[in-house]
View 1 (cartoon, one colour):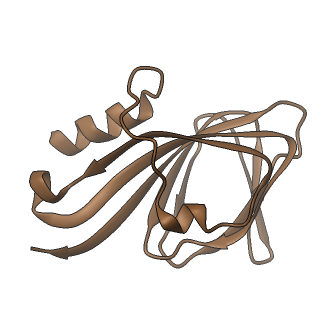
View 2: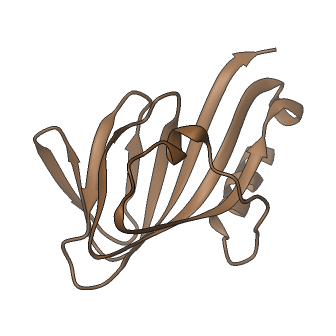
Length: 135
């Protein structure tokens, strides 16, 4: 129940704005052309689940023609929920297109990039899970 509430709170970016920090793995990515990333919340799960972990959520807006450069999800898995527009994601030579309501799972260690080939902005909510060892 608590985990459900955390994820729901992160997705409701218009209501909840808890933290304005980004994990180093996100900050280390190359600058993205036509892409805006807004922190929605960061939750430390030490007290809730007795694990060294946190969940962070971001609202990402990618302008038409915008590109997210190739990067690797080191130490984090991501769940992306598409809200608006159509995004093309590339993992190696495989391209997939996603639209509103689609869910994209990017496991730790995956390398990918994305772009907005359309004429309307792409908006999605990205939830990153960074976990460590139980304490």
